[in-house]
Image (cartoon, rainbow, N blue to C red; front, side, top):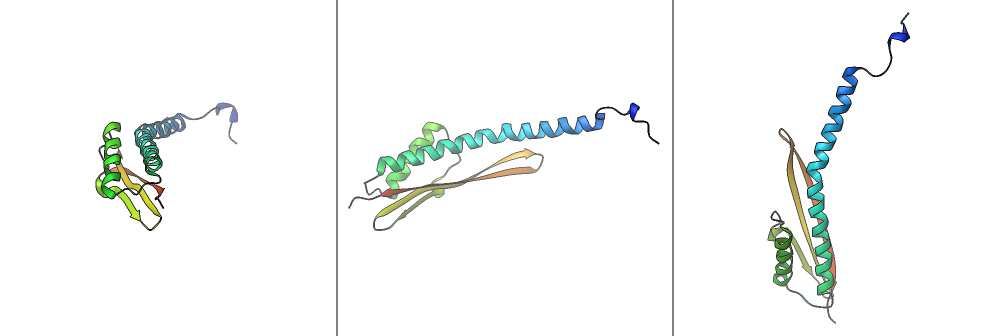
Length: 125
C-alpha cells in the first residue's frame, strides 16, 4: 500500500512542462500580435477607402493609389498590387485585399495567417 503522506503537490517534471507550455504560448503570442495589429490597420483603411469612394465610379488605378498611400504611411511592406481585389458590375464596385503573412515560429515551423478584407462601393446612378 502507498503512503500518501509522502506525496504532496506537483512534481518537478510537471512544473517544467507547465512553464515550457506557458513559454511557448507567450512566444507565439508575441510573434502573432504585430501581424494581427497590422491586419486591423489594413481592415480599417480598406473600410475608410470604401467610404471615401462611395457614390463615385473609381478605377482600379485610383483604388490602388489610395491603398498604396495608406500602406506606405503605415509602414506595411508585404502587401503587393496582386493582393488587391477589384471587381465591377453595373451598380457596385468591390474592393479589398486578400493576402497572407508567414512568420517562423520555432525551428522549421512557420505560422501562416490569411487575411481577406472586402468592401462594396455603390456607384453613382
